[in-house]
Image 1: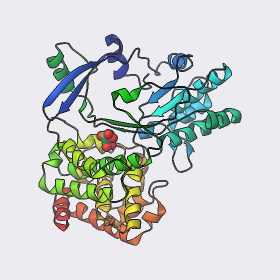
Image 2: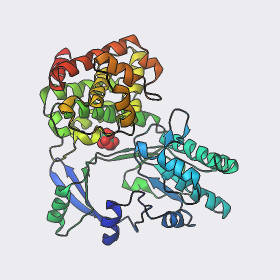
Image 3: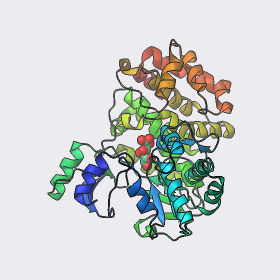
Length: 428
Ligand code: CS2
C-alpha cells in the first residue's frame, strides 16, 4: 500500500508486485526477483482499498516504511501533530483518511467495532523508540475523535519498536539498466542496496507473526541499545558526512571515504559516537563501526550526500544532539558533534555552493524566515538553536557547545566548507 501513489503503483502493479533487488557488494552486483508483494494499492485515490486490507480478518501485522516527517508526530509532547497536513485533514474527516495515523486509527476502529482482534503495527524507520512514539501518536489521534477508542489503542494494540539497517540509495535509470542487463527483462521498479542488512525487532506480537528470523531478523526484548548504536554511529556519521561532503563538492558517500581529510573526520565522529553508550550485550559495537567504514566505502554504491542531507531538523535530534548530551555527561570531547551541527547550519544558510541547491526540510520555510538578515556565525547559531522542539535546552544553553558550534560555523562561512574540513582534520 503506498500513500503517495506515483512510482510504486504505476511500476509495481503491471509487474504483479514483483521487483528486482540489486545487491551491490564488494564483488559487484547480484540481482534477484522479490516476490513477496502480493498486491499493490494506492491511497491517492481514496482509502477504500487500504481499509479493506487493514480490516480483513487475515490481517495480523502491518509494517510501515514511512519517513520521519510523514507520520505527523509531536515528538516533544508524545502525541500527534495536529498541524501536520495529513493529520489535520484526517482529524477533520476521520472516516476517509489519507495519512498514516488516520488510516491506522480508522482501521483499528473498524476492527474493534466488528469484533476483530487488532493487528500489530511494526514501524521501520530511523526514529528512537519508534513503536512508543507511534503508539502515543495513534492513541492521541484516536482520543481526539473518541476517547474510548484512544484508551483501547493504548492498552490493546501492540507497536513493537524496531531498528532497521540497510543503506538504500534512491534508484536511478542506472538501477533499471543494470537490472535489465543482469536479468534480461525490463524492470521499472528495480531497487538497489548494499549486501549488509540488519532488522532488530521487539518480540511483541499478540496475534502471531511471520518467522522473519528465517531471513535473518533478530528478535529481542528491547531494541534500546541497538537503536543507540545504529542511530548514533551510522546515522549520526551519515548526517555529518553528508553536509561536510556535499559542500566540499563530493556527490557520493564513497567519494567522502576516499578523501583523506573527510575520512579522518568520519572516523573521528564514529569513535566519538561509539563512546557515548555501552555496547548491547553480545554485540560488538566497535566491530559494527569497522564494518560500517567498509559499507560507506563500497565503490559500487552510488549513495548521494544530497539524499542524506534532507530533513535535517527531523534527523539531528536523535542522531547528533542526543549523542552530544551523553558525550558531555561522560566527559567526552563534544567537538565532533559540534562540527556536525555547524555543517548542518551551513547547509541551512544555503550559502554553500552559492545557494544553488534547495533546502529540503519540512521546516525550510521557518528556517528561511528566522535567518532573514542574519549573517554572522553566532547570529545564525542563535536563530537555529532557538527553533522550537529541536535542540534540548541543556545543549542549546551550554556555553562550550555554543562556542564550539558558532566558531566552526564562522570558519565555514568565511573560508568555505572545504577549507573548514581541512582545518578540522588537522585539529584531530
Ligand atoms: C540515511 C539513512 O538518508 C539518511 O538519513 O542516514 O537512510 C541510512 O542510509 C539508513 O538508515 C541505513 O540503514
